[in-house]
Structure formats: structure tokens, C-alpha cells
Length: 254
Image 1 (tube, rainbow, N blue to C red):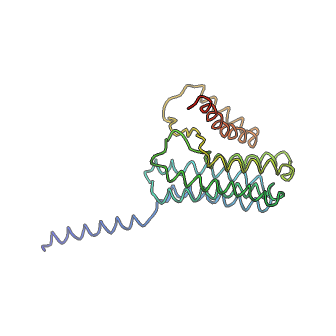
Image 2: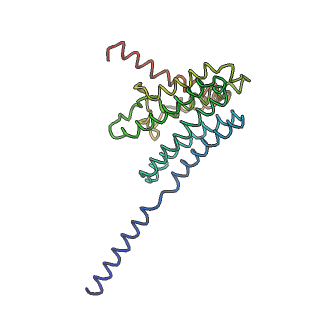
Image 3: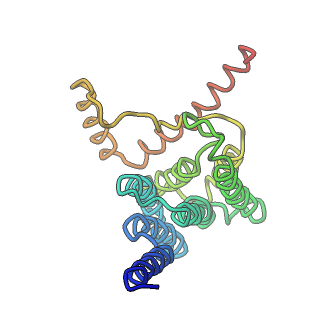
């Protein structure tokens, strides 16, 4: 082997070693958002245990925002990996599966005894099954729709209901039965076959009429006036929309 061949072989070995080294690492930026969402879910549990239910609810909504950013950041920076997808699912399970159930349990469901923790478990199990089904059907699923209520939306309904109660000075024990039905219902909707719009194909880069920008500004203003009630209403309508359209399709025989 002459010097040129040896040099070429050495460079190839260095390139292979560098690729292996890159393969062992993970991309920092998108996983920072995922970790922040995970922490928000963890904080929501700690806040609820200490009776800080409003902070717990806000933490879950912060986790929703961060969860929406990590995937977009990964796509924009071309840093999508299998590790990131799995890590995101585990973070979702904590922030949108475990945290809302425990927050609701600490606020209201504990007063029901066994039916209370059963409702919380139905929600948690529903979130776990929802995420597992979603991950297993990524390649064949219709990107225009979600099958079952998305776990962030279910978490928003549960968290916002607690936030509304706390904001209006309502005792969770007084609404425990209703809270149990709401929590268990969200859990069942997550594993149902009800279809929900995904809104994944909205073109954020395209041009829109001026009144759309005005409407968005007004929407933000309305949310800021009464955040818990408005958020509960928005996500409650979204949850009902799937049931209404599904029922309409059944009536039409489709």
C-alpha cells in the first residue's frame, strides 16, 4: 500500500468514526423544548400536591405551548430523530397524561374515594393508549384528522376546568362528581374512534385577508380577559365538534 492509498484509507476511517460519534449524540435545541415541557408537567404535579392548583393548571398550558414548538423547531432546523420522537411521547405522557389526572384528583376527585382515583386512572390509561396508538399508526394515519381526542386537548379541558373552579372560589369537593365524569369522559374520548380535525395543513406562510389578523388579535384579547373560561370553552367546543360531526355522519349513513 502506497502513501496515497494509506492516506485515503485513514481519511475514510476518520469519516466513519466522526459519523459514529455524531450518531451517539442528540440534537440539543428541539430536545430543550421537550425537556421544558416535561418539567412543566412535573411542576404541575408538585404544585397540585402543595395546593397551588392555579399554578398547576397554568403549567399544563405552558407544556402545551412548548410541546407545539419542539416538533416545529425540529422540522425547521432539520433535526428530526427517532430519539426525539420517543422522548416527545414520554414527555407528553407526563405533561398530558399523568399531570392533569393528578391535578384533578388533588383538587376534587380525592373526595370521592375509590371512584375518584378510578376516574383519574381512566384518564391516565386513556392518554397512554392514545399515545401508543398514535405512534404505531404514524405511517398510515390520515394527517388531516386525529383518531380520538388529542391528549393535549384533553389535558387542556381538565386543567382549564380546575382553573375555572379556583378562579371563581369553587371547592373541588362540591363538584367532585361532575369533575369525575369530565375526567373519565376525556379519557374515553382519547381512545375512541371519533375523528378530530388536526389543523396540520394550515398554511402559515401564505397570505391571508387583513380581517384575519384583526380576528386573531381580538381572540388574544378575549383570552386575556378571562383565560380559564375562554380556554375551557375553546377546547370544550373542539371536543364536542368531533362528537357532533361523527353523529351527523352516522345519521347520514356514512
